[in-house]
Every structure is written in structure tokens, then in C-alpha cells.
Image (cartoon, rainbow, N blue to C red; front, side):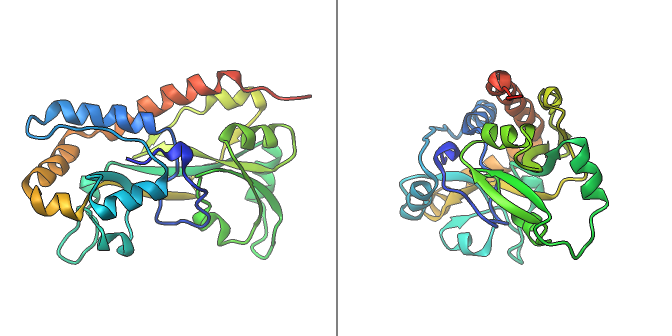
Amino acid sequence: MADHNKAPMFIDAKNEIPIINSQAQINTLKELDLAIDEVQFQYQQMPWQECISSIKHGTVDAFISGFNALKSDYAVFPVNKQGKPLDKYSFASLSQCLIGKRRFHSKWNSREVFQSKAFSLAVANGHFVGDAASEDAFFIEHTFTLQTAIERVAQGNADAALVICEISKNKVDLSQYYQFKLAPLFPPINTSIAYLAFSNEFFYKHKLDANLVWEQLASKKLAGVYARMLQNMSSEQNTHYGTKE
């Protein structure tokens, strides 16, 4: 498992998942671990590129990732005969929304299609821009943390930021931002689906175990558990947010 807090920024990474608290992922997988006697999980946190390298070399057995065809060369995802990922076996889908003040909401909803670089967008490390950039509507400023991105918007130095607003159709409580007069814009601007994928080496040695894990993922419906754990951790981290007048 990658330590997404130490991952590089993914710019236009449409097939990646947003980088958020990896401990919430681990705690959710522990629920899965308890349900499966045949498989024992051990957890490792490492930078993203190191995680990819470890998957390729078989020193790490599984990781949570978005799907793309290139990854299929070194990892096994739950796919059908046509090589398309099966969403029923996914870990979770993660949707991002723009968040900003009321003035931004009004300007965004009345924007002209041909407008270019009309809005400034603070994008925290690991939050992918993806389709948001395809409209060419944003001047993008990257920040190291979500806290910094939110502060930029709260202080009027950016029009909007990106936040996780839904996890597998479960809306994330973003009320902690109301004190800064910030609210999310729905519908989400992009959605990415995360899968628990296995290294080639592990899968071909333990195919039955891997399929058992995917079946349990489908039956346990852990996306709701993940949403709650992520929400609790995000709320704890955001208690020290502040703005300057």
C-alpha cells in the first residue's frame, strides 16, 4: 500500500485516485482482514513510486490504485474477459467537487464556455485535476496540503479548491468549511474508481485467495465504512484550520 501522504503530485492523472489519508484505507482493509481467515494482511506505507516499483518486483503483494491499461502489465485488477474493470469488486469510487465562496458559485454557474483561465484553482498535492482542466477554465496553483489550498480560498487568494465530496455515492460531510463561508459545488467535477490490485507474482501463485478477497470486497460493501473513517480523520485534521482577516 502506498503512503499517499508522501506521493508526488498527479497532474491530469485521470486514472489515479486522489491522494488522501492512507490510514483510513488501512483501517478499512482491517475490516476485510477480519472477514477472511484464509488471507492475512500486513500493511506497509511507502512513497507512491516506491510502491509501484515494489509491485513490479513482487516485494509488495497488493496496492490500492486506479485502473489503466499500462498497470495491467505489472498488476492484476478485477476485470472481465474484455479487460474492463469490474466496478462491483472495487474498493471505492472517489469524487471531487470544486469548493468556494458564494460569489464563485454564481460566477461558475454563469460562466461562458469560451472563457480561458477565468478562475484560479488551488489543487492540493495528490488531488488530481483530471477533467477539470479540460475546460481550460482554470489558472492552477499547486499546494502541498489541502489545508493550504482551503486557506488560499478562504483568504480570497484563489477562487476554488478541490475536495473529496463523495465516496461511492456517500456524500462526505464538508460542514467544517462552512465557518470559512465555503461550500462544495455539485455535481462532482470528476470521479475515479479505486481497486485493490495484486502483483502478478502474488496473483498467479495465489489466484484463489485473490479472488476470495475481491468477492469479500463486493459482499462487505466497505465503501461506506471507508467514507466514515475518512470523514472522522478529516474532521480531526481540520480542527486547527484558521483564516486571516
